[in-house]
Image 1 (cartoon, rainbow, N blue to C red):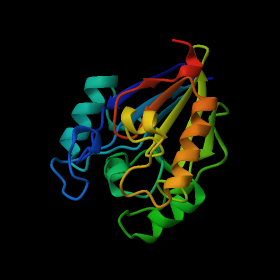
Image 2 (cartoon, helix red, strand yellow; image 1 turned 180 degrees about the vertical axis):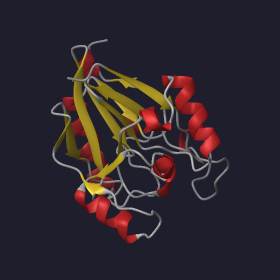
Image 3 (cartoon, rainbow, N blue to C red; image 1 turned 45 degrees about the horizontal axis):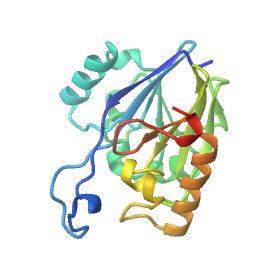
Image 4 (tube, rainbow, N blue to C red; image 1 turned 180 degrees about the horizontal axis):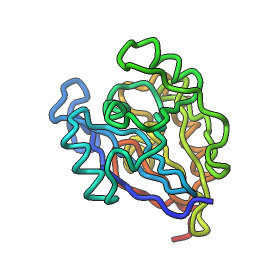
Length: 207
């Protein structure tokens, strides 16, 4: 079972339509939300964002007390670079992604060793679920913890505003599919960790 999970970095987007900003021009650097899941002996980091080793190390230590060698699993939700920049710092961990995502990452030539195709269930407690729309091969993680159904959504849900609007982000490959994925997550999740925002509670949670 999942004992606990912690947000390591709270992400942001480079331009935000809900703040009246144009979607055509990046106004700030963007990075993704990253989450550490503790499950038995596993220390699973989802979407490590920081290419800079010192910054990644500082965020990991600040939020979890762990060093790079304390993380033994990496999971990447999709092949956009801001969700896997930091994987290279975790040389001692297994790198996992859904099969199509792993294939795309391995074909990029960015990394010195391959990502492994993830099974449908991690640590006998965490479901790898297909959440298409942002990309066709996007996968999120779902698990139970403290009596709540938690989804680490990646960019299937960009921010709270995109969740409320049931809308995909500007670079989604299929907006209709993105909306349907959000509706599906609303039915199965009490807690959602968006790809570029802080945690949100769903109406399903009753909280």
